[in-house]
Amino acid sequence: MSVKNSAGVLKQLRGLMKTASCLSEPLHAYIIPSGDAHMSEYIAPCDERRAFISGFTGSAGTAIVTETKAALWTDGRYYLQARTQMDDNWTLMKEGVASTPTQGDWLCEVLPSGGRVGVDPYLLSAGAWESLHQQLDLSSHALVPVIPNFVDEIWDDRPPRPHKPLLHLPLEFTGKSWKEKVQAVRKKMTNKKTSALVVSALDEVAWLLNLRGSDIDFNPVFFAYVILTHDSVLLFVDESKLTKDVQRHLGVDVSAMETNSLEEVKVTVLPYDSVHEELKQLVCKLPEKLWISDKCNFGLANLVDKRKRVKDANPIALMKCVKNKTEIQGMRNAHIRDATALCEYFAWLEKEVPKGNLTEISAADELQKLREQQELYVSLSFGTISGVGPNGSIIHYSATKETDRPITTDELYLCDSGGQYKDGTTDVTRTVHFGTPSKYEQECFTRVLKGHISLGTAILPNGVKGHAIDTLARTALWDVGLEYLHGTGHGVGAFLNVHEGPCSISYRTRPDEVPLELNMILSDEPGFYEDGKFGIRIENLMLAVKANTKYNFKDKGFLTFEPLTLVPIQKKMILPELLTEKEVSWINSYHQRCLDTVGPLLKQLGKRAAFQWLERETEPLG
Image (cartoon, rainbow, N blue to C red; front, top):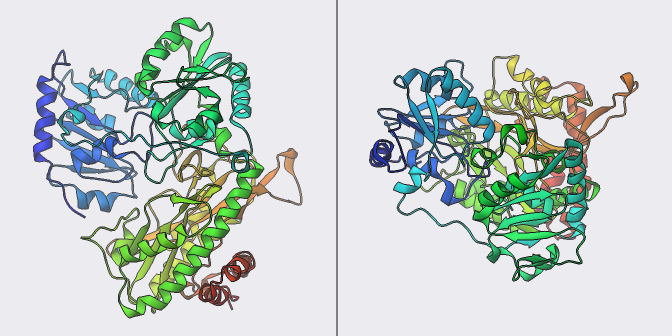
């Protein structure tokens, strides 16, 4: 990975911190968050400010620049990547390591008396702003909103904001009309006694209106806000994105900027950049409180007096992650088609790798071509992680021309990939060896597999949160002193973002974490990474289903999980002597399910080599 020389941009930024005309006094520190104004995890090129200033391109991280220091915080997925991409001007702060100070603690330590910390108020959530503000204030420092954004001021070739047309999804994919969704949200607004709800997360806007876009690579979302009142839906979006088909879908007369009066649910389209002024006016007009989640950016949330604001989690977040019957069936169908591409891919790799012609990039390109052949395919769901040997130990590795490594019969190959289909989103990781793995690699793989099975077969009462079951995936590794530094499971959208909150399975607790519920879809992806040598991860997506238990304590009801991913797990990598009888039974049952479900489609498509590979790879484990 290339290293950015950051000396020049840091000098420019520090100059603005002292002399920018928008400042009443100089700043002693400036924060560059990872996300955009919608708190997105994955962002458009125009919003990659932290990458521009630091060189680190991972999806999570915060940079802070003072008069003499530059530090970047990121989590265990990105330690190796950040260390490789940043130059000596930067200090890497490893989140999750006990000795690493929080951003607030570090600022309080390095700031002079009465220090002033600047940040773009539209790039920090209201919750994060309040927390940092309180901590700095206790140490007599100030958190200062700064507009314009200083990074934008020095970024000469900053890409423009995308303006791509939108797509509307019919009922055959969504299961509910956008009007039904709006009515359901309004009921929740009534229960909260609120006049309006501000929807700022891009996937929430897309889900609510049954629209999809392509403004952010791999994420079928678009730049927009919605403000929902009891008698209107205000959609803040670039008008040029609305095709005639989308206009009909919403019942909007865009040219007149008025809603079709015959529509029971009204929609008004307003310019994307007018949301600030419109919200300011609504605050004065509406009699009751306004619902603005703490996840919304501080720039908007701060327009509403705290006494008039409900800052609970946006109800759409939870509604979206509990899938309806249509969405579940769509996800099942998408995973079957996706599995045919993966079976064909691994069968092809098995044949081609010994010839010595494949690399991480050329292999990933072939996988994309195979996915593109599938019905209802739209795009990848994230950039394919195709990592050989030491590159596989970089948890969110992205191959480049400089790092592209040959796939051989001597090293482990980790492939984490997924597709966006109109009926669902997939995310699957398999780790394979095309030669003879070492006993140590097999043991590590088998212990990861034991954790994968333990979590995937868990039975838990309704109301349990993901952090309470995370240890199930780690115990077999902990038994021998091994560990991995990332979460175990994330929610997945239905033709939406591949990482979807607020449900998750992680060793970390989060204030917005919700109990696991029937019909949520999550990943199950424990792993192990030997720095500089290899990486192992086994990932399925799974659906939370009702568990039929002998008893039902206090009528709580119990859940378990059903795998949606249908791709064999390489038996060559397994040490059977480390498995229990129950675990062997699970593997054989899972493989039979893969064969029974995916096999017929492979035969129908005439994919003979892939079917023969699937048959062989699903033979019972002895």
